[in-house]
Length: 508
Image (cartoon, rainbow, N blue to C red; front, top):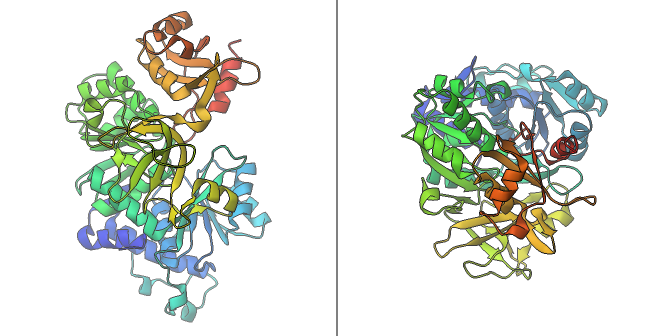
């Protein structure tokens, strides 16, 4: 099995009548999803989509998204899935960069932006959910019956080495860049991750993350690989109603980022007595503080936790065994089967256990590079000895003797304070160990100001800074602390640093 859509076809053969994906109002079984994606593939062909041509999707988390993803896979047409609120300059950048032949969007303004560039644009609601085999699908508009029924020639059949999707990710570059994933890389990553998380056919995986976030998107593929039911959460379901939604969904697995876990822990603290069926919580995207996990484990005795480390460029780099964070505090896992992670020095050579360096990932989970960014690809995906590709993650960390990864911080979150090198991630972790601090983020020095620690909690700034001296070296403690009601978050649940600068400025 090497093509992405073969995941859902195999699931349809194993458990055709089991629910594959659902929202509060709609659902598809594995069999229905496989057949609907076949119908949608014929529909895409009728709109002129061919192998190698890109399809951009701007959509909320709803059942037509996996239908479109698997349909594009069948045609060998790489898809780029964007958040439903992507518009304006951000959308224009993707349209100009990916040069798609088709845009499918729920938003009329997004469709208008595509039409201005001569790109065919259709409403998301037009995606057919026809539950019949491909051979029985009627011709799409503008396609003759003969053309629609004609077999796809060999040149139009995707190969495992063909791109299957472009995932746009932000970073230190001025504009989002697209990570290119091939079929075989994506399928390898799915099976490697599933071998560690072990989703079950009777699992209900609650996914409150946008599908434009690769962590959310891959829940769909993990569901197909395992036979599990993926329950898609919507943005409105992640706030105060999160506890009720997880309970009502009968969720057994929660795909989490720190903000989601912290919200659930807070809601359970305020409303004890809920009986959740959760057996597993996973986390990636940012380091997870111990306190929310302690509270969740107390409130949900059946819960086990698997912390992970990864990047869009390799999906997952490391996964902890269940509850390994208890025996190996501060770790975020060991390398996926068939892959490796090591810390490298400035010259790129491997460092021994215990020494901090840049984390490097090697294996079939490493993606192909960046779309139309040859210089950046050469920098982040260098060839060792001219032959062996590896991913320079841009993260600092070290490995212990057992191969567990200890994350220190991104290269760009290391700053100098009082002449010493300091990791913002380390400072944030120390702040979260202070009683009364619920969330924490550090703004490194910039524009003449020193580093600022921003926290959420019922505690005064001077108390935070004094207590921090018991957690880390005094020279690492920021000189200034600001308490805010909430930390601004991006659509993927990470701290929005730009908005945080504005919030801090209001406290001057």
